[in-house]
Amino acid sequence: MVEVNDFKPAFTPAVAAEAIGMFLVTFLSSACAANAADNGLAAAALGTGFAFAMITYSTVHISGGHLNPAITAAYMAVGANGFTIREGISYMLAQFTGAICGAFLIKSILPIEALVHPFVTLGSLSDKHGEQVFILEFVSTLILGLVTFATVVDRERNMSDNAAPLAVGLAYTIGMFAEGPFTGGSMNPARTLGPAVAFGDLSHVWYYLLATFSGGIAAGFLYKYALGVDAETEQQDAEKGTEAKRFA
Image 1 (spheres, rainbow, N blue to C red):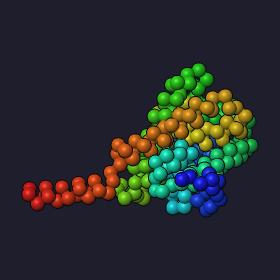
Image 2 (image 1 turned 30 degrees about the horizontal axis):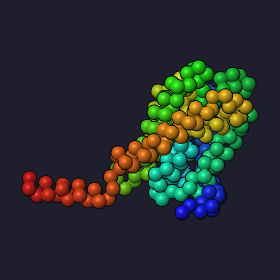
Image 3 (image 1 turned 90 degrees about the vertical axis):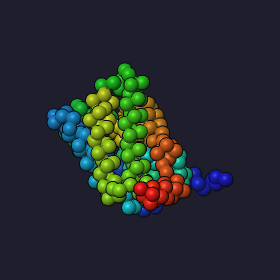
Image 4 (image 1 turned 90 degrees about the horizontal axis):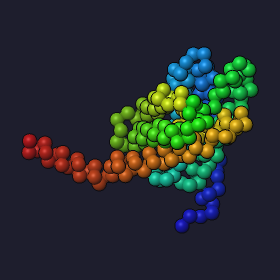
């Protein structure tokens, strides 16, 4: 039975790490996106990827390094690592707050000419082709979620524990290269909402939020039920492998 207290947010070191981490990621990735006007898509894609990898490395041992409400929603949906509703609500409030603060700060210090190309996650399709934006954001967030579950969550089976944050950063980088010009390359509800609030323009936010949350949750279920292997199955596979070697 779900208790009322399960829905009340709590402030913990993990929640603080998510707030600070999302603040820094938004600040850094937004600055890189603003530079893309003069330096091309690579500035936004590589900058965003490196920022997420660096901050994930810095927070993964404290909070799990979610830095993304869509990933947190996936944890909640499938109960990854015993994640609770209360933790999820606390994380998401922290992530959105950090992103909004980071967006306001970078907007306040950028020169006026840099704001001609805002760091909001909007691309060429955003104002006319909502369905295409939804599909691109859904698929890119799905891929990001699968990478996160395969490397950060499923540590007992993956062979690259120390490289997990780097894999997450690469997922953001590839996503930005793939969809950046068309959607702005969000893959993260907080990364969209923060700058949208800072610029006072929420006109296209809803399908970004819907696509990224849906993609993250879908990744959680897909990994758990299609790609996940429980302990009993692993043991059976190990025994079969032993028998195969014995009779080879």
